[in-house]
Image (cartoon, rainbow, N blue to C red; front, side, top):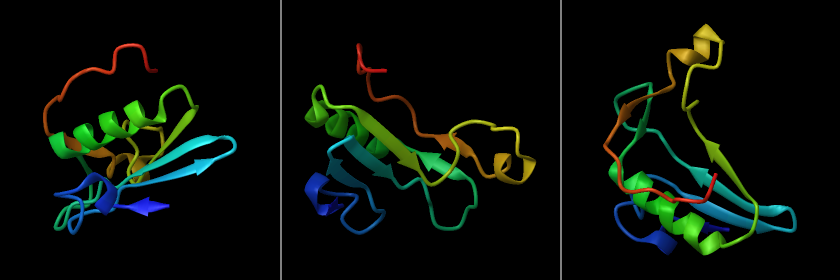
Length: 97
């Protein structure tokens, strides 16, 4: 597993992103925690990291794990902590779903 340093600043010290290659595919772990708030954050740096990780995965199946739900999931206790702050877009992956 590679943590943070593989993708450089700002993730070397601020948050943990990681990738684990398995026989089933690539597991990507995206840290959406930000100090001082309880809901999740997906910022431009996260977006760039994710785009790079998806590009490197090429045609392998990818499984993405987030610390916070990216949308309401019908569980009020968790919905209040979903990703609420989006830091803008950073592009489009095109064919990757």
